[in-house]
Length: 205
Length: 205
DNA sequence: GAAAAAATCATGGAAAAAGAGGAGAGGAAG
DNA sequence: CTTCCTCTCCTCTTTTTCCATGATTTTTTC
Image 1 (cartoon, rainbow over the protein chains, first blue to last red):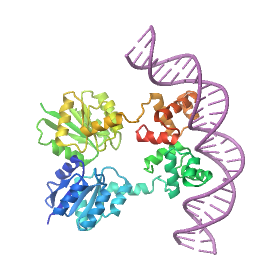
Image 2 (cartoon, protein in one colour):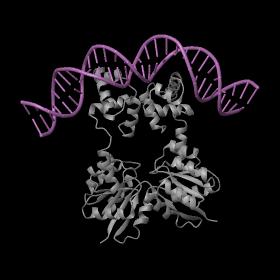
Image 3 (tube, rainbow over the protein chains, first blue to last red):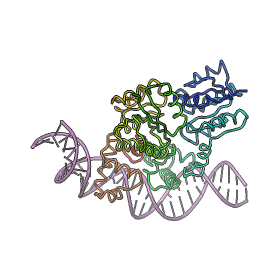
Image 4 (spheres, protein in one colour):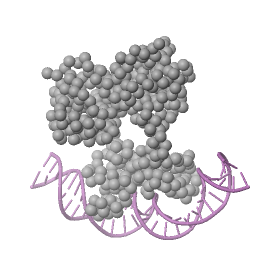
């Protein structure tokens, strides 16, 4: 029995690429595609595929949100996340919201087919590189910040001085100074410039 | 006479998608693809296509850099930038480094073909949305920096103090201070934190 | 070749951040 | 109950940045 699949991605080239890759595969039946979350949901009211390949970045809604909604209404459908960049947080969130797998857009034909097979059998599938990213980022230099440190960091990035941050958070200037020093230490840097650069890199701000 | 094209993109699905889209087109001859800047340059030593479709994000080198290199060695080749997100600075930089056009990855088949036709005729082609982005951002707040200002900004972002920057550039500390002040003024901010945040946003660093 | 822009340097002062060190209160986890 | 973490607060010194103002030389641009 063939596995029916549907794809949601706002990039025409990617849709076409996947279709072309899966064309010769007899075990896979192409049901169509949607370029927005809305049209995906509209389609699902008519027909339900076995598997949805879903981009994490959609124009009208995040793939993470769509993932949650689809799983809520149609729990039988397996969802495979699809992303061009290996952002660990997205991967994590897709899986938390019911996705069964994750493949990167530079995946090979074999990898996609393997992912589809895996999820139809109820297994999870993380493409090698995505798995590596999860791993790499875990032991990378990205520091773990406390709630307060994130608040302070955000305000620093907005240009507030220690004194202004202190006023805003109703704490002492010296406390802000301590948080700031801890931030510098956690990031392994010694001034605001590099702190903000890394914070931007790690998407804290 | 057919136009020969080559594609550089690290996403297999995109390569496959474009190939599939251009397959029926008789006027276009598919020469092959590369997934890294290095293999692209290696290919070009053997054969030169008329047009290269080039992703701005490559694993080993930025598309902007590759663009510059290719145009330097093979000025006859037209380059079309390819990107999934419409970041104005990338578009701008690709064009500054010799690209003749720019299409987004959600472009339609017609748009890609039109882009290829345009550049072979020596015209520039910016896909509608990309053009909109350029326009929108042109009258945005992105400041225009001088060569020296960019150098100073980069070093500040690396964590160097005015004194250290001065030593590195063989200029006086007061000169660095002046450049720094001008940077703050051009960005319309009043401290390093916001300066670096915006610099990161505008891809200066 | 004149005008504009960029790069260079300076003085002096106020504000802010960085560096070092210490310390107490409260909560979570073992 | 103790240990660890987070958040809080403090002093003191040094370094760095920010602000105001002005000026000379070199390079671009028209």
